Amino acid sequence: MAANSTEEPSNPPKKAKLSTTDVNGDAKENSPTALNSALAAATLASPPAPVEIFRNDYKPLAHVVSKVSLDFSLYDGKTIVETVMTVEANKNVADNSNNASGEDEGLVLNGDETCVKLLKLSVDGIADTLKPDVDYILSPGKLVISADALRRGGGVVRTTVEIVPEDNTQLSGLYKSGPMYCSQCEAEGFRRITYYPDRPDVMATFESVRIEADAENFPVLLSNGNLVEEGECSNVSEGRKRKFAVWSDPFPKPSYLFALVAGDLGCMEDSFTTMSGRNVTLRFYSEHKNVSKMGYAVESLKRAMKWDEDTFGLEYDLDLFNVVAVESFNMGAMENKSLNVFNTSCVLADPVTSSDANFQRIEGIIAHEYFHNWTGNR
Image (cartoon, rainbow, N blue to C red):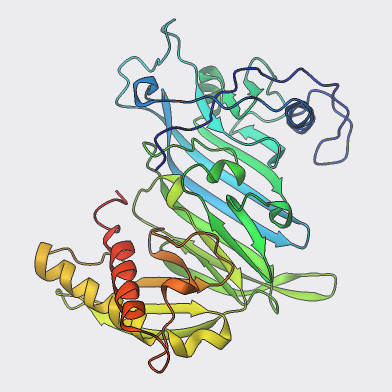
């Protein structure tokens, strides 16, 4: 994680005239959509200067997300993300306040308004009656929902946003590179996917992540945890079939370890038997032309899993471990829980042409990212 971040702008952008529509196409100047769009326009017109934030500036949040469900609908040119968050008072904050006045400032959600368009916002039990600047406040990089609205609504917050991965040239958050979608959320990429408390001390259980996409172009739909369900969607988009996959990760994690991959990928499958006798499925995905070069990486992973058991008694804790190695990944490697993502340079090896140094590098990187499962991911 980076030592410093850029959460707070020093010169907030000027207010812009509200002139957009809500998700239903109705002109509503005070709707969340209108406010979000106006804020985005102002931010783009007058970008805030970066501000360093140090460890001494840290304050625990008054409210945290304990459980979250996500639903991604991937379409050419836009992706719709629906989020359901279960919100609880932070047990580490005795009076539920984290500011000088001692007041409960509510739920603080991070979000990059320049790429995340807020379409809907509700707190269960309260939807149409949510009042801007009273029940919620949109400001550069933040959406704050008041403590009173949380109490009245039962602590379940729902948002629907629109993002455009095709335009994400920062390659932070969810982006499309070539024919596939990929994510990179460390250090602060999740706020470019949806509004969320995007910080490593908020550990939530991602109970359900549903991904839906074109069936022909994106037959492989991956996220963290175990695969719960997959199949063909009943709806058809422009005459094309769509498919879905549902993932569930029972272990709490910070948002920077969330991952999503969607594409047309080949697979090499193997298995590992843990020290307690459980069978873990291992799947390595890459472009079809690269599948035959993943064998050494698969064996490296099995050796790393065995070493962690023999040395520390640490047994892998899910039924499935996925590795994606693609040419379009912008980082070298990322330790997302149960879905490690690599650039192909860190995974592929050909016994005929690769050097000893190549094999040694693959062994080390595969092991390093796997070891994060117990030492770094929780």
